[in-house]
Structure formats: C-alpha cells, structure tokens
Length: 332
Ligand code: PBG
Image 1 (cartoon, protein in one colour):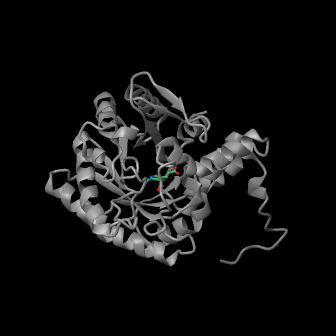
Image 2 (image 1 turned 90 degrees about the vertical axis):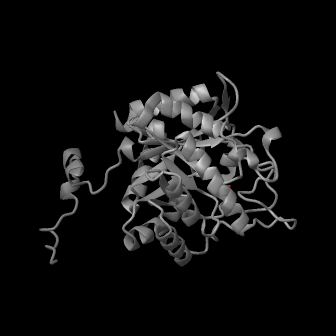
Image 3 (image 1 turned 30 degrees about the vertical axis):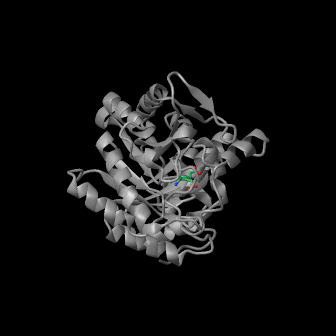
C-alpha cells in the first residue's frame, strides 16, 4: 500500500473527534468477553473480604448465587469458581476435590439451579485448594509433584465437577497429558458438550500471591511451583504447550498471567485458530487497585485500558476480578 505523504496524510484527522475515534476503533470490549472469578467459603450469609484483594470477598454458596445473578444481569458470560476449603478437609492427597458435595460442586449446582444456561460456570481443576501442602498435585517424599498419578486424580476431579453441572472444565495444574485424559473421560461419561479451557501457558509467577490468600493455600505452600508451571524466560515452549492441549482436545486455551504476557497471547493467536483467553490474575488486580488508591492513575480508565489491551493482543475474553465493575462501566 502506498500511503499519501504529509500533509495530505494526517493521522490525527480521524482522531480529532470522539465520534470519529469510535468509528475507526479497531477493537472493542463488551461484558460478554468477561469471565468473573468468585471465591466460595462455607456457611450461610457469609462474606469475608480478602485483605490483599481489596473489593473482592469470599461468599458462602447463597451469596455466590447472588453474585452469579448480578453477573447475568450485567451481561457477563461466565463465572469461574474457586473454593476456600476448610483447613480440616485439606489432606496430602487432596481427596476433598473428589467429594460430590464439596464447596465447588454445591456452588455449581446452586448457580445452575438458579440460572440454567443463562450463565456459564467454569470450574478450576487442580488440587491446590484441597491439599495440605498447597501444591496442585500429589507429591512424593522429596516434595516433587508427580505427573501421571496427579493426572489420574484430576480426571476424577473433572468428572466430579461435570456431574455437578460445570459447563467449562479449566485444568490449571500444568501436568503433561491431562487434557487428553480429561477429554476422554468426559466423552466416555456422556459429558460431550462440557468444554475444556486449558490453562496451557501458565507461568510460575509472582503475581498469584493474593489468590493464594483467597483460597487459603498461600500459608501452606511448601517451596514453589517451578517444576510444573512454566519458566517466564520462555515463549517457544508456550506454543508447544498450546499445540499439545489443542491436539488433546482443548476447546480453548489460556495464557496466564495476563498483562506481562501479551506477547505470548499474540504469538498463540497468530499461530492457532482457537479461542484464546487471558487470566488477569490477582496480583495484577491488586496492582491496579494500589495504583488507583495511591492516586497514581484513574481506576476506571486503568481497568478499561488493560482489558482492551487483551482484546487487541488477540483474546476472545478475559478472566478478571474487575469483571463486574468493568461491565458496569461498559454498560454505561
Ligand atoms: C491454582 C490456580 C492459581 C490461580 C488460578 N488457579 C494459583 C497458582 O497456580 O498458584 C491464580 C489466579 C490468580 O492469581 O488470580 N492452580
């Protein structure tokens, strides 16, 4: 393409009024692109604010249903559920993950009973909210997270969640081969339309701190997750992870964390014809809230700018703790 030259070419022309900027905007974000993570706790009528995630609380199942109704009203597509399992139910093998009446399953059933197909429910597959050591899988006596043994348990966890009514199974554990195992089990048990959103490129990140407070695993975690989550030095490897998960039957893939990894999202989107999601994680949320509280930026503008950045990078949607707030802003 041969462009005109200045002054015939003035890129500021289309920028000069707001109607014109709206007319030529290349990317958009709408409430339907948002997935809202919610934290569940035991009890009735309980709301527990999370200190490191200002503005975010854990809710008992009745409160979760209210949040889900609110999400639906705002036009949000889907909620993502995370349980704060009572300490006495956390064991080395994380067996509470397989209990058909655990917090996650009760919350899923309650939302589905209330809203049916009006709102998606995404459930996280990994053992960290259920283990006494805070790791996502089964560990050996050296503290190493075992791959194949863990994958076998994750299959049971995924089936447990699908039986409770989960619409999207989202394995966040980074074990090799688990997407294929879970897909096979879902097909084999009649859950043919339950989607898998694979946390394909999930990095061992310093941005997960507040989440670990929220699900109560932070204080329990021994060591780090670097033998299973990805090294943040790598991006070629992210493409290999995504390719494997697609080949094993993932319906969509995720890159996590979000903003520091926009380059990965773009590479994945350029390479694969598959819906890509980003998880704007707890530490990113906390950074925006801290910046706004310190007067270093306008909260609403920071929220909308970061969310649109994910769309520009190629995302179909974003998991964000700002989902309800952003949806309210977008709905005017
Ligand atoms: C657990 C899981 C984590 C997050 C989502 N699922 C934490 C971790 O891997 O330690 C992080 C989300 C966030 O920080 O908001 N497998």
